[in-house]
Length: 254
Image 1 (cartoon, rainbow, N blue to C red):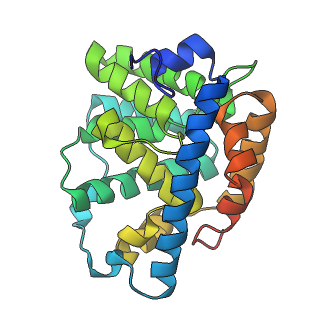
Image 2: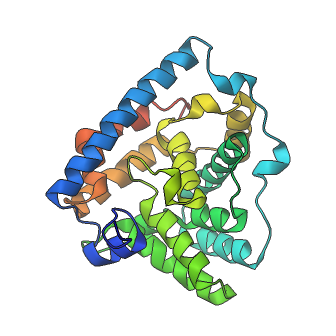
Image 3: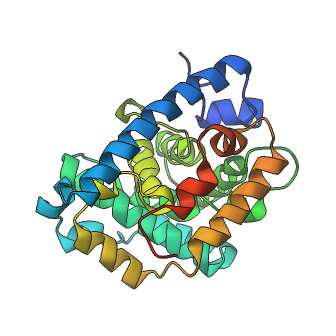
């Protein structure tokens, strides 16, 4: 499959506006069913205190934000655009993504991953019209990348990580930045793979970047996105993924 035909890539999102065809919806629903099975199994491991995260260790230095022209520019934009609830989510998503990358021994460009994490939800604030919110996020990321002279290849990696991050399943073959951003955001939004992370990492991320009634805020933002793009992935997640319930049942207080 080409980048233009693969659901979630920046090329696909630009061509379709994020609107799914029937076959694409069927494939994503299949991915959702597999995610549900994994989530149920992981939650049982948590309840039984058999989760691997309890026996894992991640160096505190591994989850610290990197410092570069790109990361400072992305952070400046995110601070300007995002309300505190979404901004803190973006920081937590980076920390969880970095921790999972450490546990899996993955090599990843942490600067691009951080920029993707800080900018991935800006479209929830900026998007209008009928196109997927990640398209607005990716365009803002492209502007940041151009401002700091990021290469064309790295810019595409940054944008596709953003536009793909809420596919029900993002495989490692999509690249470590896309894979880890999706995983990190999934931990924070619905608790996916929280069982793989050391409890200290989860607790410190929430302490450093408070959730500030994140569940209620994000459920409302997602409902608005699903209504705005009724043929998009947000609507599919709400309809077939019980997404509102999944947000509410994430293993965080708010």
